[in-house]
Image (cartoon, rainbow, N blue to C red):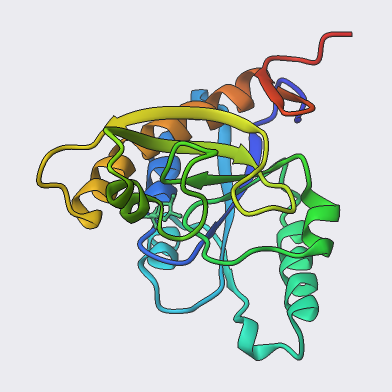
Length: 210
Ligand code: GRF
């Protein structure tokens, strides 16, 4: 974590519309928020997430898996690009790729992902649809520290969202995303101002207690 007089440097990874990214950019426009988005990376070009970064004057980079010889080579390039911006924290906000060994070796413990379900329920790409299919009455969103599993890492924050009669996967996901943006902005702000510790599976805001 940065010294108290410096803002937390955050690199955000996106693959799509980037509304979570936008929420962070908006929050970071106020210096008292404590965090600043120093770069935005993507695994595809031409997405609204990158356009949002460009409009905010934030540098961007794109690494498409298909442009590399192997998944490992892609992962190394992603790691190098992110590392070049010297982030304190990396946030995957709708980034639709699992990172590899090189990325986790460099950013493990400070790489967060946001997921549109209440972990450990409904990991993977279809959280809202699977929650609806299962018939749960409450779902939500989870911010977690990425580990080698799929949406399995230690939980930083969670917020519940009710499932309503007549919900479709799209309407439910949209309602989750409204909550998800608030959760993400609040948690990153707390990390910027207070730090966080990971003790096994348990994440706490605040400095490490000796
Ligand atoms: C979010 O719900 C995120 O959890 C999921 O994809 C969505 C991304 O939305 N993985 P956006 O690109 O931030 O609008």
